[in-house]
Amino acid sequence: MAKKSVERKEAWIRILVFIISGIILAVWSAIVKILSIINWFIAVISGKRNRSLAMFCEYWNTEVYKFLKYMTFVTNVRPFPFNKAGKMSKFER
Image (cartoon, rainbow, N blue to C red; front, side, top):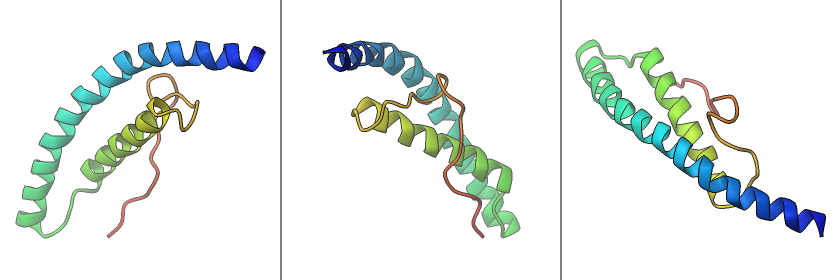
C-alpha cells in the first residue's frame, strides 16, 4: 500500500518537473540549435569541429534523454535541474 502512495506522489511531482525542466530544456534547445549552426560553419571553414561547442550540445542531448525517460516512467531519477547535469558520451574525432 505504501509503494502505491509513493508512486502516486511521484506521478504528481512529474507535472512540476515537466513544467520546470521543459522550460529550461526548450530554452537550452534554442541555444543548441544556434551553436550547432555555428559549429557547422567552424567545421566547414577550419576543417575541424569545436570541441567545447560539441560537448555543450552533448550535455543537452543527455538531459533530454533523461527527461524523456523520467516523463515516460522508465525511471524515477529526476532530470536537470533536480539532479546534476551530465553527459553520456565523450567527444569523438
